Image (tube, rainbow, N blue to C red; front, side, top):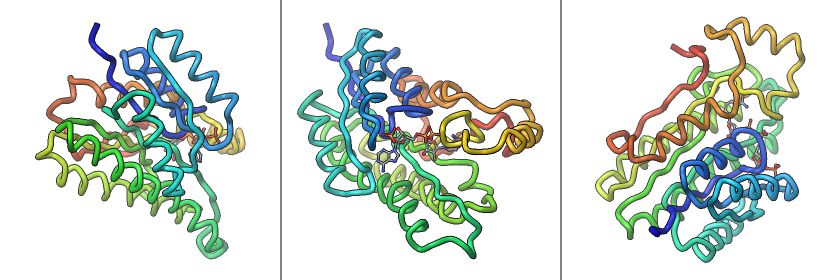
Length: 246
Ligand code: NAP
């Protein structure tokens, strides 16, 4: 039997990352599940992936830390032998109005959401270069496209991810490596659970499809971009947001 391909998903212990890990497992990828602190949840995702008939492993790493990222990449290669698909999903928010935003909150969000994507993409691309194939999917946000009051740090990081995606797509295309981004709108996860019910109802009203998205709505697009059906697509940003941005 042919070896499975391998996918590395950052921030896969819960939310959108968990749904992506499960979708890729369902599509036959062995999966490396990265997490920051929630080992128990990561192990649950591992068991769920294995129940779908593939190999899975977990690895704790702060993706904002270069040494942690190097250890994560090394562990993935040691465990599975390759990285065919990298999904840069892990992300954080530290919301505040710009005039009240601390330097630390600005730096933390840039370190994880933007520098983390740079560290991982660079390390994975070196491996993909040798194989002359690979797919990288970066999870950005509608905030990075339209801006969002209270999210100067987050919107800057996610806009940065879009610029990085398009640049790296141009640099790596000749090597058979595709790089795309997915921009979710409001998705029901722990990240948006902190919003009041009142605010969530108001947001829902502004979404043309009149509901918050599910992690699976995002995972469906990532699964497609990781598949051979997306063979002629690179450098694109796909909005999965119920029509919020159009
Ligand atoms: P979430 O529910 O808060 O989950 C975050 C995930 O990232 C967890 O697995 C967490 O691990 C991991 N993580 C956090 N910091 C990390 C770090 N420094 N290193 C490694 N892993 C880290 O978030 P989500 O809503 O699923 O969001 C996933 C991605 O989608 C993010 O990039 C987010 O910006 C983007 N997004 C989300 C929405 C939305 O509405 N939810 C909208 C647009 C874009 P632990 O469990 O171990 O803490």
